[in-house]
Image (tube, rainbow over all chains, first blue to last red):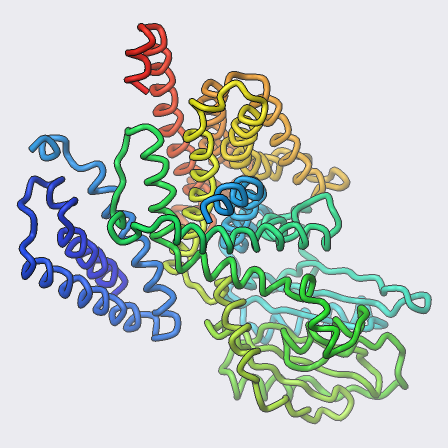
Length: 93
Length: 519
């Protein structure tokens, strides 16, 4: 359940990041169409909510909410590091 | 706004770095306490809480029958791995404070357990709000002031950052001072909820100091009245602080009281038993629940120690007190199990790193304009001494725990002295060496200081990784492994710093325009 919460939150941040043109450009992708951006953002928001639900499933609501913030912080940190230090081959494009 | 953030942050940054680093270590207080008492058996004995409690109560009753207060805390859960006692005597002269003593007992035999004298993780934890070598109140004033500035710096930081959502995931490594700004922003934004919570609740802990007039308007001035307020704030009803001997009276048996606690809270769920003025008509027995909750609520039973009757608790928990209790509880995180505790540690480390990166950013932004000025050199050297030196000093504290002779007098004080002497030595080093060189050297020193701790532990005790891992003693092994990880981390940073220094030196040897481009 903890691992699930972490991955849900990580997936959420990933969706939110790729709704942003700066990170799409870094990956060599085309800018997102408005509809695409809306979908990615809603998916990201939904996944964050799902992560809270998973945290509450493991810790209960009061402690789960506290843990949710920690899980969000940790997973966002992993994503930022992954984006910054991604393989150089991709960065070139 | 920007001005307040920059200068407020700079002036309080070094103290805040100390507060955050030692406070983060405080999240591992119990684990560090355990690690720093290697005389404990590798695997703790399985004891029934009620049996251990009975042994503890027997010990204080036999050894210190004439005490004003007995407090016995049985082993149970992470927060209280030991059978401990605390005893306060009646004052010998009117108005003085009674002698206090505390210690550990073997939970199986009830005899005194002899561990080496150590400040443990507890001392690091206390440093984060009281500092060290100065009176407690002075330390709390200084930390409170810095926390206030930190709170202002957080709010102004969010405002001047402005592009919080656009830059949410942005870190661009290797682009001059830009990457320090990115790092500072990222660390701040990614755990902003934690920082707001920890700073605000930190202020709440010591509000009785700097909001004294508000409290005095309700409770009156003076130490006794202030105590009354803190009693109400932390426990909801006044403690018995009366130091007069009441008329002797037979004590009601404890058994039924403990049975009541068992029935209400489940078995093995007692935090401590606190008996004031035992053996008198005024005796009170206070039993506290063991479980820690996010709300900070711990159930409490109060008995008349002579008759054995329950004294009813105040039924209402006013909303402001509930809010304050929740915030204080979030600050301490005592309810956190292993995973949540690691998340707390991560957030604390990110806070430490955010403050450190902010301090470094100040110099990076001003190097071209101010290099060579005294003020700039001072900031730069203080940065090296704090951000580079303080972690090593904390490592030295752990070294001192293992290497100082066990029977030396004033051992607890000396452990801390070693920590601060190390820090002072590194500050001198930072002042004497060229700044870039000092950075890389201090990072290497930190790498060695942390990386070698498992080895020092293995050479001085039998509770090293080779023993703790096979025995599955994770809270013990975690300290060694975390030190190892810190050592590796500092080595990586030291290599990066060294490479950067060489590149800069090479660039400087080339013609000036090229050097500027390389910057």
